[in-house]
Image (cartoon, rainbow, N blue to C red; front, side, top):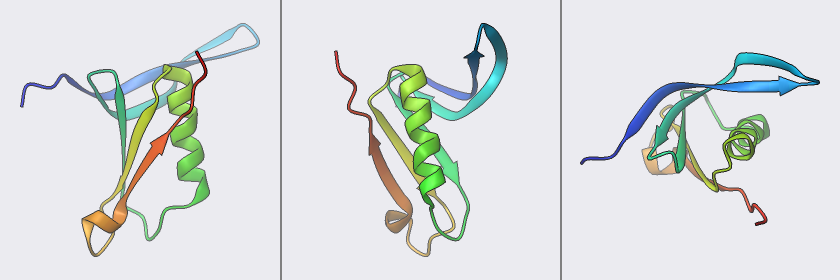
Length: 87
């Protein structure tokens, strides 16, 4: 459809002036605006939401989507995550 989609994007992590080049890895980053995290777990847990919020904060993005392919119905395995960044 013409979208720019990056796969397995390494996000550097900086802690006390120490830079880790691949601290995190985004599954999919669409147009550098929306992060999509792909899972295949029995159920989504708060740690999955926390992971997405971390990704959103590090990238400065506001919108993410967690998709769990282990759900009986795909629509039940989708979670929209919004980070309310302040300008």
